[in-house]
Image (cartoon, rainbow, N blue to C red; front, top):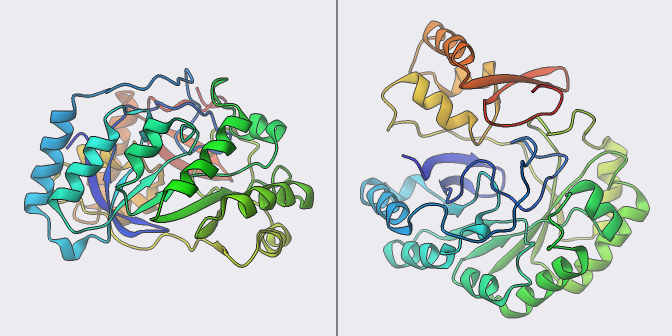
Length: 317
């Protein structure tokens, strides 16, 4: 499968069947914390990066063989920003017509200033945009956006979408130590949340290898401060628990690439996830992938993570 993956465990959505409509790493942000490395280049071009009929065919093939009891949500998310896929709305509507499983979209929210993007997302059951910064200066430092998606336009888009959308609007705040976990930074975010009025606010911390080596999660004091300032709707996301469905993969190499392209993992996590193969088979395959240039090891927080080779980490490449 090229576009559909999982189900995989999600901190917010239980067992999530993922649909990825853009190539790695197609994004209009270059977030310092991104687990997929830096965006090179940052792009704001909306187009069909793959033929819609190819994605729809793979979605339908999966839905025809899927046990709905094994899936909590069908989630559009990208190896970048999914709203850059021009026909995203058509894909969402097609899924809604084919299944009763709820549909979510994980997005940075930067294109919600466009009426067409807002309209395309309305059929989804949950939309999960980001709001990591409450000021233009911090937005540039943390999310490093394309110039076309400047801060005021971004915030206006979130508010306009809330006004039109009747589904679940869950905003994620990725907390970074000494960057947006200070009192002033959190109060600026809280002011925008008061205006936007999301249904929930999800507090997240970087647990996978961030693009920039200096990025650190907040300490306990920072987390407590965030919960206190961001209000009763704010909740800390629990660690991921669940299982990865890898039944479609007949060899361990393809299974590894499918996982680490979207979810960089430690070797211990890979061994646990790939338990249908022996430890020796997994270890040998990782060595082969490194030697062939298809995978790389990235060190963050004193831990080694396996990631897809095209992902760019500046201190590693």
